[in-house]
Image (cartoon, rainbow, N blue to C red):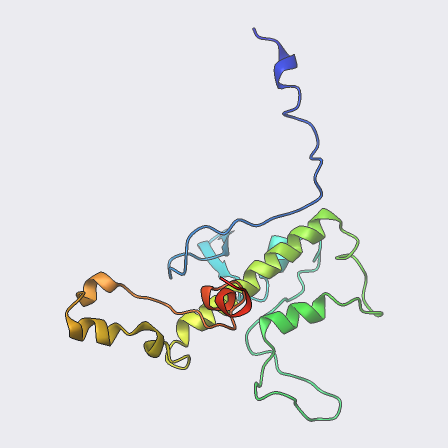
Length: 188
């Protein structure tokens, strides 16, 4: 038997008050942030971050009644009937920006939940970031990514074979934290 005094700090409470997220991998289509639910009769079901019940299932203490969260197709509603954008639907970022405002007619459960609120914020942020990356990946032609890549020029010159170049996804300079954003906003 060895002395327990050597490992006395292992079971202490955490002293930091921060919550962080570690996102491993890159823009691969196989990496998904989701929840797997086991049904009594149907087996397993995968629920993506775009499902309305994603956050309610992730945080049952914050959403005890299973309120719907973000889903695709939430229409804009304005008092004067005029929309200020061309988009018809609310983006994920706009949805969470609205949800994180204190409403007078709603309970303040989320804001009073301490570290669970911090974890909710981190998960909401990672969902928003994943949504933006998904949009960039699916809209490469609209971003004119071919102009950036120059893959056709490389193949025509004979420098590389198309198989060795792989599938590249170009992040626009508007994507915060991307290489083009960093080069545009900071001196290198």
